[in-house]
Length: 286
Ligand code: PLP
Image (cartoon, rainbow, N blue to C red):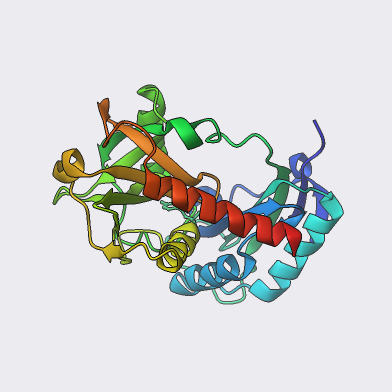
């Protein structure tokens, strides 16, 4: 196994050598923001979109970090790592300060971490054709899921419930019965050739993959309806799929043990899988 390289506040070192204070607010409160990006052919995919979302999340929680400098360090680290198929993880916390709930004084230095690791065996690749199985769980998270906070306990609980059930992902269900998103994916239904997905709002993460897939659907003349899909409507839909940086476009063929549609990855989903792959191929060729 090769060493995973990290940039910790501007210093490049093996990830295992990074040491962080127990007074870091990320450690104590989950007071921080993160991003995860795929690297294909040595190039970061959708870099601009991820950096814009990082800036927005940091602004929403008033963490004052220099994202442009952070982006440069990220690209330098990627180049230094020589990694072609990889995953970049970025995290910015509010920094180290004696434990109080309110924010520390202005000028407290955020802690900035990036690592780049090989990502050749995607955990979802084998389900791209057969389709993944998911479970439904109540959405227990807070009311600002549009902020990409490192405070992910609700998501971890949902992902663990999926793992315990032998499934690949959990669908989070709101109190009104709507399918909100996955524990680390955006969710889409297909009915009569139209794609349905939850509109953006404080209850979901504005997924970068979601946005690209909506653009690709548009380009392919696939109609998109941004409206929530109810769990009770699952029996009537033709296809279900998830999107995310690591899962890409992932067909779902089973929910809580019941087949979706024909029980196989459907034509609209497979078209979007293909269109997404074309975008990756284009990046690699560019
Ligand atoms: N929804 C949640 C809760 C997530 O954590 C993620 C990714 O981590 C996504 C959706 C997918 O977002 P993206 O496509 O930007 O990876």
